[in-house]
Image (cartoon, rainbow, N blue to C red; front, side):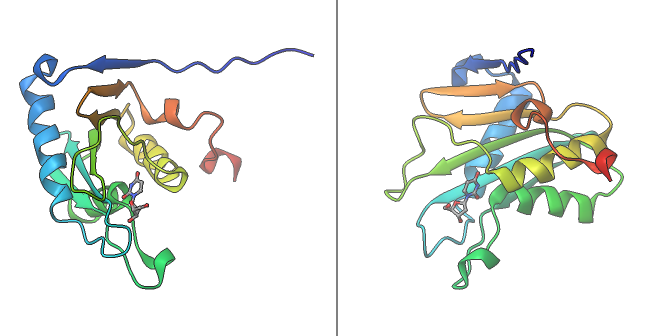
Length: 159
Ligand code: THU
């Protein structure tokens, strides 16, 4: 028997420690939360993806009365990027959320399992790491790549 230790590392920055580029992406993610359609959960999520050429695309969660038919902010952004700019790899994604009182969360949320799966494939398609920024008002987690958020993930290599 042997033990397998899977390790992930996050850097935690305060807003005033972000680079200009990071701050611009965060602003877009925050702004995207105001375009969320969340009449059921009242939980507004925004995602902003930075593409290789510097273009920023955003998405927000879009809910539906048939609950599972809705989509998270991250997948909305990734699928929009793929359909609008198929030749531009995603390099970085930032996620922000506001709670049922409309306040930005103190501690970051991180993508659900289905979004991690979709992001993993976007990373493989990009042919390079996609850095993840998770916004909390008390600290912004920066994770080097999606693969770290989905260790032992399933991908096309198993097919
Ligand atoms: N949601 C996202 O958009 N992204 C996440 O990372 C977690 C959850 C959405 C789905 C649903 O519209 C609402 O937040 C509550 O779960």
